[in-house]
Length: 233
Image 1 (spheres, rainbow, N blue to C red):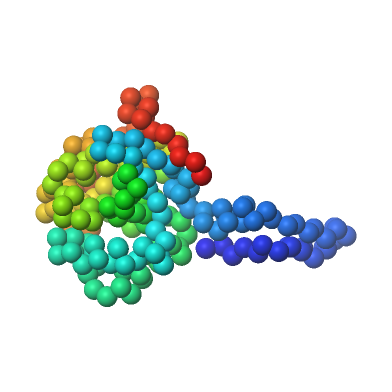
Image 2: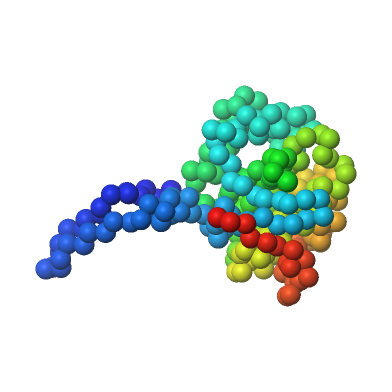
């Protein structure tokens, strides 16, 4: 991630040019330091869904690691995510994204103010996925796990996937498709994506799994977009 300096940046004079001294406003530096390649996931705001107000909030390591660690160690989750283990294993997985170049952003899904799911929003065209299937510029991928067993199997996944895909397409004007690649064995996950408006495109062999490639394409003037409302920054 690019380094920033909240103090003055001084350029040495060259070829008679004057020294340039630039002091960046603190709010600009803070925004630049957390920039991503997904048009600012942290600024996407809140969307209204049939199951409540939903918000994707980028993970904060210090406060969110224990929760994500507990979810990843649920056997039903670990069977597909394969991240069960000590907290430092989860920390390494999160930090690789948080300290990366912004192509993937780990988030908590907050429903009516309660963190209840973990998401990864990523640039599919810049992901290893692109080595295994055709992608288009700005294709955006979604990974999702529902954290608590009590929240699974009652339609929350499909409602939130539809809302998240709406957010991606609304907030990322250059993105024409939202893609997903759940394990073919994970029937509930595949079903949730299909119910959220994704279509089955193909089966894809990825490292460690055979996946269903699922795609939701942008539809001009899609009615569902009227439900997206921006929260205050």
